[in-house]
Structures are given as structure tokens and as C-alpha cells.
Amino acid sequence: MIIGYARVSKFEQNLDLQSDALKNIGIEKIFIDKVSGVKSEKPQLEELLKLIHKGDTLTVWRLDRIGRTTVGLIKFVTELDEKGIHFKSITENIDTSSANGKLIFQIFCVLAEHERNVLIERTNAGLKSARARGKNGGRPKGMTEKYIKIAPVVKASYDAKKLPVEEIMKAFNIGSKTTFYKIIQSQKRLNNMESKRYLEEDFNDFVKEILDNKRFSDSKEEGIASLVIDKGFDSLSDKQKFVFEKAISYFVYDKCSSCPNDIPWSEMSAAEDNGGICSWCQQVNGHD
Image (cartoon, rainbow, N blue to C red; front, side, top):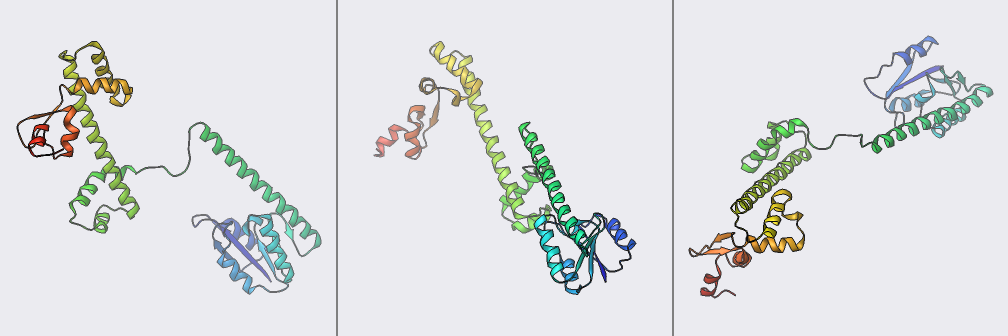
């Protein structure tokens, strides 16, 4: 009895080529798997092996329909041979019912794996070359445009605490909690960045106003202030930061939370530690 076996890696692949080749040599019973060749579990092949008997022939369209490695193929055909079952491959014209067929089978297995290894090497070389040019493959990082658009509304719904996470996900068609919390975190980062940008812009405007009004004491302070506006405070050296902070302290004030006094820059840290009150109120209230 001759039994056929066909396999495709994906459901959308067409089986016509394999089934036609098997039917053309008179095979009526064909077992079909729709799984990757590198996977060990092939349900229909296992079912076939339960039904096939000594003297039968298992026929495939091509060697790689059974497996992708030399070791796997040889092991499979050896096990069939031990049970008295023959193996035939139409494309490679291999039939293990003869000694020559067994020899040819082993040679073809070696050549098939060599071809696969060459393909893998070429693929890896192509990926390496692409990475060297700054191109990285794989799944794109970050959120899709759809989630970027709905992120502010999703975050607002989450912050309102009126609906459970599951209902928010359902309302906005978000597939998983991982994606949901990624949206929330991205919006938090965006909000923090926006806040920081506005603070920097306000501070830069403040420094620019002092600079435009020629209120710094000398050209050195003016030069450092210009650097702050152009490149930011973090771009300054430690010495420049010290000079700038001392210069700016004459213009930066905060209001005391307990009296009408102003709190200068130099005393702001101590004021924050004591409930936002000025040094005079700290003395009156007995603060250190």
C-alpha cells in the first residue's frame, strides 16, 4: 500500500502542487499537515505512522516535507526501514526499497541541509550588512499611529478612575493590558516632557529679560547667561554654574507662606525645608 504525506508551513499556502504530484502516481490516501517543518509535532504524520504497516510505502512530494535536518530525515527513514516500511520522494526520485535508493537518499539529505545552511548564512550576512548601514529589522518599536492618537483620551479616562481598565480597553479597542499600560506610560512621559519644556522656556524668558535690560553686573555674567539661553543650564561648567547662580540670585525670589517678605534664591532651599517660610519667620517660630 502506498500512502502519501503532504505539508505546508502556513494555512494560506497552496497544497495543489503536492497533492497533484501524489495523485499522479496513483495515491488516493493523503495525510496533510499545516505546520512548520522545524516543529517536531506533526499530528497527521503521527496518525499516518499509526496506520502504516510493513511492506507499505510512505511517499512525499519532496524530502523537506518530512523534515529540515539531515539527522532528522535519516533517523525518520531508518525507523521506517526497521519496521519494514519503504520511503519514496517524487522530486528527488528516491525509493528506499532498493540499496541504491537508500544511498541516494543519504546523499540528498546532506545536500539539502547544505543548501539550507547556505541560505541561513546569506540571510545573516544580509542582516549584518543592513545593521552596519543603520537599518534594523524586526517588529517596529513604539506605539502605532492609532494608539498615539487616542493616548491623551485613554490617559484621561484612566486618571478619572470612573471605569475599570478592562472597560476602557474595550471602549478603545486595545488588545492587551501590556499595550494599555504602554499607552499610559507614553502619555505620562509626554506630559513630563511638555512640563519640563514649558519650565525651561519660562526660565529662559526670565533670564533673557534680565539680559536685555542690562541688569547683570558685568560682561562675564552676561556671557554665561547667553549660554544658558542658547544651550541650557546643564551645558555650563561647574565654575560657570556657580557664577550664574550667584548672579541670578539677585533677581529670583519666592513669597513667604507666612508673611509678605520675599525669599531670595540663596534661602529657597532652607525655606522649602521649613514649610516655605522666610528666614525671619523661621527665627520667630524657633526653626533651626
